[in-house]
Length: 156
Image (cartoon, rainbow, N blue to C red; front, side, top):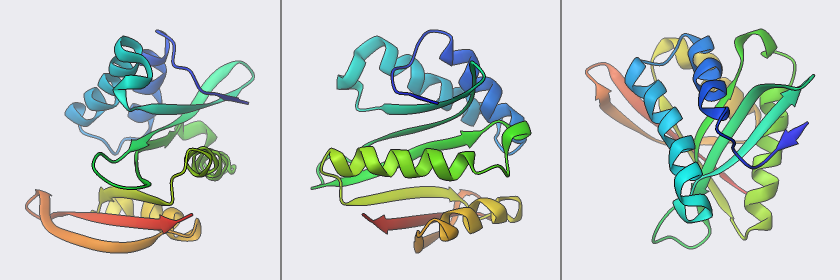
């Protein structure tokens, strides 16, 4: 069900999964793909780690995470996304739980997640809260006027 090493085909998988949400701007989608490229080019030294969820041989969700430079045991969850057709079936929670397990095994103690505070992200924020994350800060107009950044944290 889970796979940890990205392959060249994951560029398209990540693009398809992230696009399926309808939430992300084209530039954000490109960033998601660039992180796969970075890992493929530099390996573990990229600082980007992945968990891919597969169902019937098809990649349907993923996380991308990594240690936060110049911190002791803090990690960022850069991306978590599940293909639209697979949402609401517990895949996101399983991906997040596995990612937290890996972070903990690597010595991580705190996980940070940043997301938009736009109304369409309300289900995303509620998901993080159901998974034990709390809002640590809200940065007003961070992404654009009227588009605040919400920063969530969870101690492992």
